[in-house]
Image (cartoon, rainbow, N blue to C red):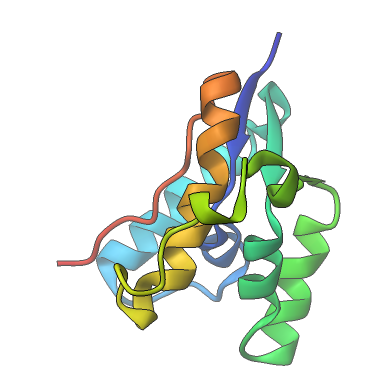
Length: 125
């Protein structure tokens, strides 16, 4: 049985971006490209949040991201939320972070059903 991996938007962004001249970012890109070669070992999943984020920005870059995501199984986030009230409350999360909070929350019920390693965006110093 394959491990399940939820892909966050940064993974596909690093995978499709032009090589960065920033050493840390370039290392993240290289690690992502190397990991991508092993993806057949995993059942990959994304959510509508990932598709929405990947579609934003430069049209050519977005098209590259979406081309890769087209082959990955889409989670039905609504089916995994027990009720609307279970989503992050708008008043408790700053507006800028609300989308990210909803994104992370959407994977919670899946993770409780079976462990789903979540790829995290590396934090920049």
